[in-house]
Image (cartoon, rainbow, N blue to C red; front, top):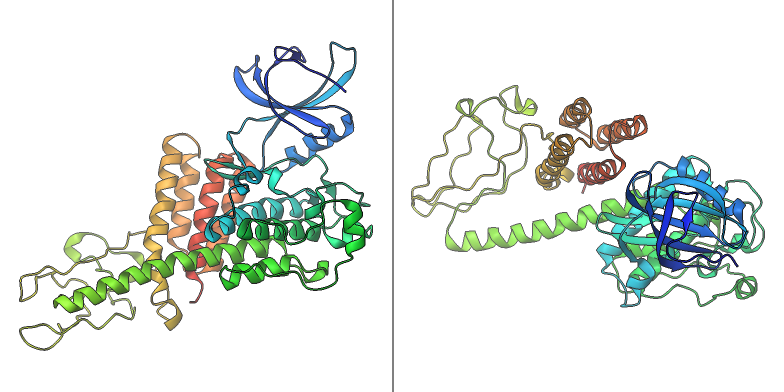
Length: 450
């Protein structure tokens, strides 16, 4: 076994400071990069140099903000005269998901959000023909910026012969039979991970390859109990013993994102309904539709530039106490906001000029009101990123304008593709790209019919 001590220097550059973790074939160190004066993580392989080389090459190909970033690969002769291979990685501070699960299951929204982020990394890997093969709670790190998928050390190319590598509770049934490497195996592991996050335990008891070989699963996977229907059913689909019946990683990410967006919307609507009931009880006229800017207030939103009021269904206001009739609705956006006869000022909600207007079909009436917050957050992230130099100013302006003209989930998807292109060009930092993509996913989910 290759042994290192604090203070050892690899490749005359990386000073090992302290052990972070020890695995079966590797040791992870916190280290100091003397050339660039920064802290890094150094993974030293104790036996297989080819494994370290493959991990470095595979991870370097995968440009995704939620996959750990590889800085360097090297080989060095130790003090014992042996050759050691090492991979230099970005140093991340966080808690392994496996450690977090020791305290019990996650709230279902947190579990769904974590699974969605991991699914996005797998989607990017699968698009390049890379299969991770070791998605597990040990290989997900919970950081301040969200979950990160680690350790592509045993990743393989789709279609290659499989071997008995990976963490047994997460290994799909077809891998035990010697089927070629396939992305569906990662989706199965993601299903195990989601089940574990939702319930606190893995769906099956097997912990060794020998136990897996005797299990021979053919029945549908278990559905986690005590959680909402949509994530529970999706988890069950991921665990299907038939690889062809499992959803793709992209579908998993999109469905979980939509489920979370609807849950947030539902909570907002419930709070709004409570406010309406209280206002009606007090005799207050409370409107649930946006106030559109008047001619005196400046330029209008492009969505209402034709001078017509948007055809968004509005709640019927309570009767005015003085006349017994509701206040008359006006089609003119220039109508003044005068107080009611009782002297109270009507509250208003104003959409930002760049917010797209959703069609007034019945399924969209309530959903459209959650757009301003999501759009504002996207524009705020763009502005902060441009100010910090994390995204080119011309790219930030282009993304802002592209979203301003988006009026459907499909058009928001075009903005996401444009963001991916700019990431590959190096015009936006990976971390900011991940945050922006997550916000665009929320916006796209809001556009979908209720």
